[in-house]
Image (cartoon, rainbow, N blue to C red; front, top):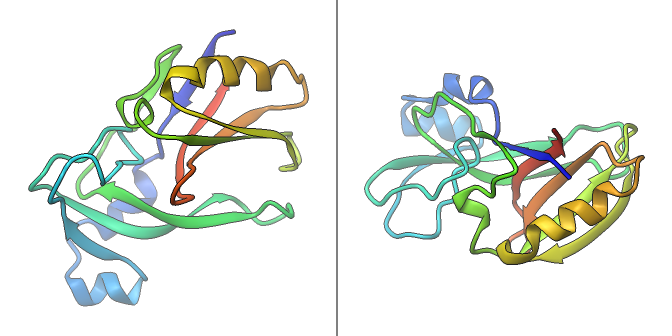
Length: 155
């Protein structure tokens, strides 16, 4: 099974880059300086943010309204990120060492199946979920904190 894992498009976040703290706060976001690794998973490049860099902590809608599974949660994006990760048949760094919740959705945004895995079993779970022909995309979330990680589609 060939799959593609993609990070978030940076375009919706660009207007936040460089805003002062008050302007970020007015938009429900805050700037943080990364003080350790791991701990600040970047949702655009799908890497761990490096110590000393700045990230924005903000709320992100990973599954739009229109389904009972509408989802929003906090995520980190690195300030200034300009290129989203898009890899085929690879597991990005940020997904290799976390317990993940994979949630398979059909075209109507209804969850068809879900399960937990870690980086070493991620490929197998992706293949199992995509055996259901009605699953069009899988959302990966960090199991411990619940935040959205990445989108997985058939390649």
